[in-house]
Amino acid sequence: MSALLTVEDLRIAFPNRDGDPVEAVRGVSFSLGRERLGIVGESGSGKSQTGRAILGLTPPQAIVTARTLAFDGIDLLKAAPAERRALRGARIGMVLQDPKYSLNPVMTVGDQIVEALQAHENVGDREARERALAMLAAVQIDRPARVFGLYPHEVSGGMGQRVMIAMMLIADPDLLIADEPTSALDVTVQLQVLSILDRLVGERGMGLIFISHDLRLVSSFCDRVLVIYAGRVVEEIAAADLGAAQHPYTRGLLACLPRLGEHRHPLPVLSRDPEWAR
Amino acid sequence: MPFLNALVRFLGAVVLTYLGLLAVTFFIGRVVPIDPVLAIVGDRAPEHVIARVREELGLNLPLWKQFLIYLGKVLQGDFGTSVLSSNPVMQDIRRVFPATLELATLGTIIGAGIGIPLGVWAAVRRGGVADQMVRVMALIGYSVPIFWLGLMALVVFYARLGWVGGPGRIDVVYEYTLTPWSGIMLLDTALAGEWEAFGNAFSHLILPASLLGYFSMAYISRMTRSFMLNELAQEYVVTARAKGLSEARIIWRHALRNAAVPLVTVVALSYAGLLEGSVLTETVFAWPGLGLYITNSLQNADMNAVLGGTIVVGSVFIGLNLLSDLLYRTLDPRTRTR
Image (cartoon, rainbow over all chains, first blue to last red; front, side, top):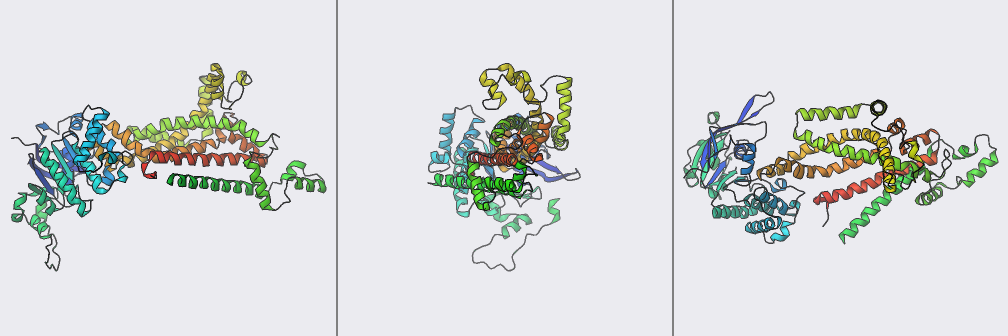
């Protein structure tokens, strides 16, 4: 079985003030089947930019290069803009961090879901509405018909994120990129949203890239984990084997997790070795 | 009844603002060093005549009583008599305001109709040639004196090319064949079915309106650009792209729809500015509008006319504020009370 997504030596550079390129992502490689891959790293490590590069949503001034960047046999770097746009939403979806900002405030959530469907499939308004309602029900929203007509500011964060998931899954994509999908939510709501995501990804047999800074969350949710440091993959490991991680950075991250009944004094700090970034 | 509540609060605010406006105009009338009695009787009148006229005008009454009387009159549309034209001020304003209204409305339509798309274009092509072109055009609009541009436009389009009608609202030939029903030439001629006169009025109107439109376009396009840049940087735009929407849909349906909310205020303010009457434009184009009327009255110490004009301008501001408030409510669901 060929991989759904192949990334080899992905590099993303941004010009600095003097116009010299500064690499934010420096040679990331991985491949993905219909499985769950977690990408973990701290702020600025390049994990989000990696996700956006797959969709073709890096800012216009960014320079994206790769030996291979292929989705289902399509060379993404050679694909025409229209071809990439046809992939977005239809075959690759993306859930962003905070529904408070990622939903359009002046459009009802129903219209935003319908729009996502009609951008890719030629369906009439009535059928689109039916499917949007079914999708809202699938993300466990109790009264879909009522929520359909609400504006984003009228729904809670957890409901907003479920709307976002419904919007990104309605066109039935093969791959979903979830960029910190639960970081902006309350802890209790996080689990609810995660379980919905878990079920839908499982049922539909999709590939999932789960981007997060929460190593524990990722290890319980994903099959495989990619640890990124300063734009490079420092460790790739099956989630189950995380306890046996080799790289000192990963071990440092794991050591940060507190345990009940444990006294830690002084608090451990992440050690960083400039060697890792080479 | 939250709706009724909101309505009462809304109307209360209108009444208070209006009272404030009337109080200000009233006290301006009392404070300026122009004696209304002397303006009527002249400065050689004997003492007893001055005293009698003062009493007739009610100027011997306490100030608060004078204000109440003033209030009562203004509410009935009585702004007193103009010294200059010896007509009731209200009658004069009925004549000059439609001229300004017509000019300002077409000017705003041109300004917003061109300025908004230009601003969007400049924002989308930020830093590109289009952005620079729009920037230079707006800069010229900001910095060139309007009377100079007006004269140049007359020289080129009227005197040289003969494409448009010259100063005035309509050619003299048509002037007296027309029953002034609304005072708005385009409307009057169209209602009368006088299409030749309509075309003539339009050819007179289009040049000053384009000129005012150009200046409001300069402002509106710059504001649109900055609102659009702000919206295009929002996360929901990333979401729209991730959904695979077309760039046109993202710009016009998503970003502009959000930018439209603050734009309402910008367009309304610019419209209100034009409705005050642009003295320079009205002078250059011999346009018998409100700006010219107020300026003339002021130069001749015709205070009733000045205050009447001021009240009209103030009412226009209040009205447009109300209108933009209502538009806000329809455009932005977050401001609606459910």
